[in-house]
Image 1 (cartoon, rainbow, N blue to C red):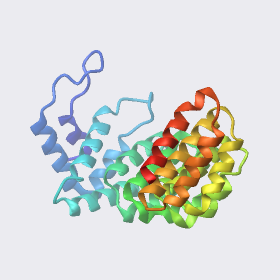
Image 2 (cartoon, rainbow, N blue to C red):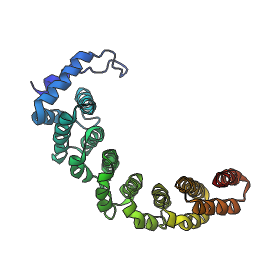
Image 3 (spheres, helix red, strand yellow):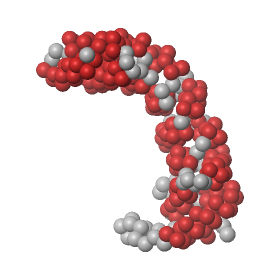
Image 4 (cartoon, helix red, strand yellow):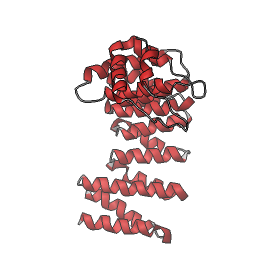
Length: 277
C-alpha cells in the first residue's frame, strides 16, 4: 500500500480547522503500516509534504508526527532507530527548506546519536529557522552532540551563532569555557548574555569576577539579566559547597546595587548570605 493510501486514515479538518472526528484504531493501524513499509514508505510520505501555502499536506504531517511519537515509546528501540535513520535520510533530498524544518522537528522527538551528523548540517542555516530546529533536535539527543555545536560556532553568523552558543551552554560544555568568556565580552548584547548564562550553566568558579565586572558595565535590560546570572551562579556555587565564592558574589551585588529599583537584589543577597552561615 502506498503512503498516499495509508494516510487516508488520518482526518482532515472540518470547517474552522478543527479535527472533529478521529478514528484512533484506524490511525494506529496506519502508523503500523508506515513502519512496516520501511524506508520506501517513509520516503513516499516525506514526498507528500509541501511548503506552507503550496497545498494540503495535513494528513501527511499528521501521519509523520504520529509515527515519530509512537516509536519513542517503551520497548520500541529497534523501530525508533529504523524510523529515525530513514527520516534523517530524507534531509539529503532536494526538498523545500520549510519541509526540512518540519522533518527536523520530528527528529527532535525520535532521533539518536546516529542521526546527529545529518541534523547538525543545518546548525548554520539561517533560512526557515532550520538552525533552531537543528539545535533543538541535537539538544534532545544530549551531551554527545556537543562536538557538533563546537564545530558550528566559528562558522555561524547572526541568529544561528547565538543559537549555537546557547546550545553549548544548554549542554553544559565545559570544554567551551574559553568560548563563553570571549562571548561575554562581545559587542552584541545577546551574545554577551548567552556567554554569561553559559558560564553559569557550568558553574565556573574562575569566572566569578568576570560575571561581576560584566554585570556592572551593563545597562538597562542587560544589567538586569547579568545581575540575575550573578545570583544564579552564587546559588549554584553555594549548592556545590563553594561558600567563599558565593559570598563574594552576594557581597559585591549587595554593595553595588544601591538604587531603589534594585532592592530585590539586595534582599536576595541577604537571604543568600544567611544560608551560607
